[in-house]
Length: 425
Image (cartoon, rainbow, N blue to C red):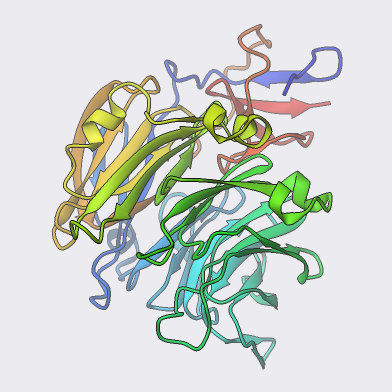
């Protein structure tokens, strides 16, 4: 994206990687399923401030198996707590605002700033006192002013990751309960009109069990296909949302890569970093993939041109020493890289940090099964205004949720070159 000075003005804030920006990270520790011991860790500038951030601030447990966290609009944070059937809404300082309790079996979250969207494995939801029943799973629409569910739309069985793009919700369906329910694994992405909450298209990716969080880099999605742990091995689906919305045939909307992407994130240059675990029936253990994906090259030039089996600096080398890799994240505001090690799955895990070039910095003890991350914007806001410089004007632009954008909105704050800026037409 080229931001021409004749068309716009970029008002840059001096919160660059080497400047005043803070590393403020919330880590979601899932705890042990059924033990009601999920926790949040709060990390700031090289220090774990708390390994029970929510509990200490609000004097209550967060719940059983939290499994996603998103920044709604820069003012509120949403956390899906799956087994407790709760979506917590909190302030960036950790204080609780409310808890939404009528989206049972909530899984993954996304927001467009006005609404929060949550996928659910359940078959029922209450809207305005009326129970709505679905055969498959659904995505719920929640007003972030009232925190009420205002609509829901049936998608596929056991929907997982959800992303917002150009007024549409892209929902990855897993069919993960196929082993216990009377249906097959799913291999589709449902495209839902976010305003009407009606499915406009269902895209067949050709790969089954689209499980876990998806990463979004502008119009591109990175979706993990788990497979069935047998004949159908794992894969990574890279999807072009613009092609989907343009009505391009299903098989031209995405490319499947022969790698797992169990944990993925978006780098500051718009590429995807991923760690994938593949279970080996032969050894009874796991084999890991470490990949960097250029989504544009994958879709335009073929998979071989867009995939590198490495990560920056020593990131891959260091993660290979982990007992159980469990998460991967890039802070969109600073470029610092993070990964977590679940260690034994039943004891305290570890948070590891690298600088943007992949130089290892250190590790910190967190809590049980640390698997999800959210970087917070610098609490100081936009200050120390400087004039636009010539530093890489074609670098990708991200919103405050760390999602790459192609069309900035005047008056909104974005991230480019590791700096925050106010977009003015």
